[in-house]
Image 1 (spheres, rainbow over the protein chains, first blue to last red):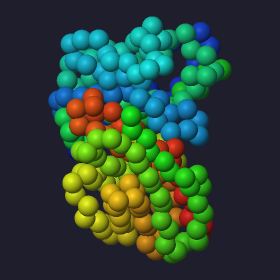
Image 2: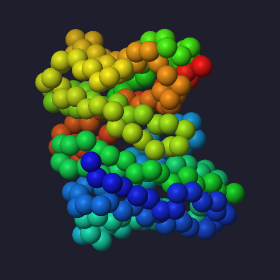
Image 3: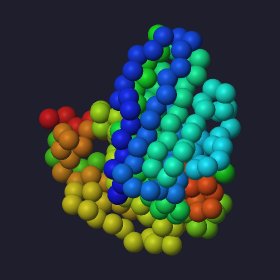
Image 4: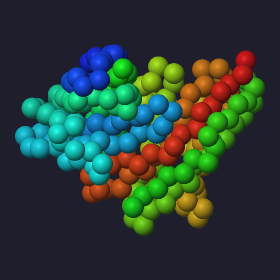
Length: 113
Length: 115
């Protein structure tokens, strides 16, 4: 399976600021995804990061709040904009080939004060 | 739409006991994939197993075994002779092909192994 890294691993941010999370894979992958896991909750898909085009967002998530970039087949970023305490979560990226298993990065723990 | 139910929110067992985590799923698709992931306290999500809907064979991997029954739409996970390192949150998930590969997760079961 691919080796996936995320930066930062954790951060504490002030309300109203933005944080960009990076996801790097050691090999080219077709699909990359971003998930949010609120405290004590399950994982919810934010969006699918598409290489060379806009991300595909799930219901309840919008580009203005969670802009995503995917400049190539090994890298993606998720920005959490204008943060509030409700954005405190673990953010995870995952990668997969078509009809194959999704593997997850180590996650970014975000606390918004 | 897909749905995954993990009715057990928390389970505690004494070390060396066997424990079964339940997973019930709903989907109208005839082809689908089922998964189990482990999330230890560190927060990473570790892949454990993937099953294709056409393959109902049970699987065993060391102390772990999985029972897939389409008749009851269940995909249960058993840990034999549990160890403290098994303490984690376990998620069952489902995806369908050509459905943008989206994983639908259950709410997770927090397993605590008491030494």
